[in-house]
Amino acid sequence: MSLFDSLGQQKQMSWADAMQQLRSNPAATLKKAGYTIPEGMASPQQIINHLLQTGQLQQAQYNQAMQMLRRR
View 1: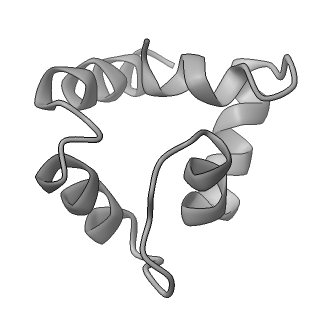
View 2: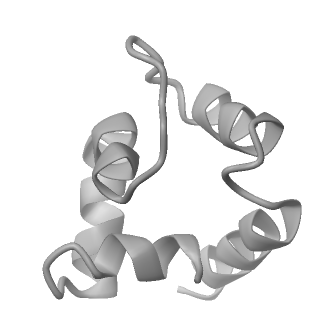
């Protein structure tokens, strides 16, 4: 399952809504999607690094998400 799939499953939100929610509060949005983010971590790069280092996100998933973002 991709990152955006897990975000979208929360309440049948559109891809655009999921992206807006992710941009406005990345840590809270990812926590709602089931990811573990330490309190106080707000920088998107810190969050991505944490998810990759803890194995919650695979490099291939991250690459796929970035490709999707470039297409939109």
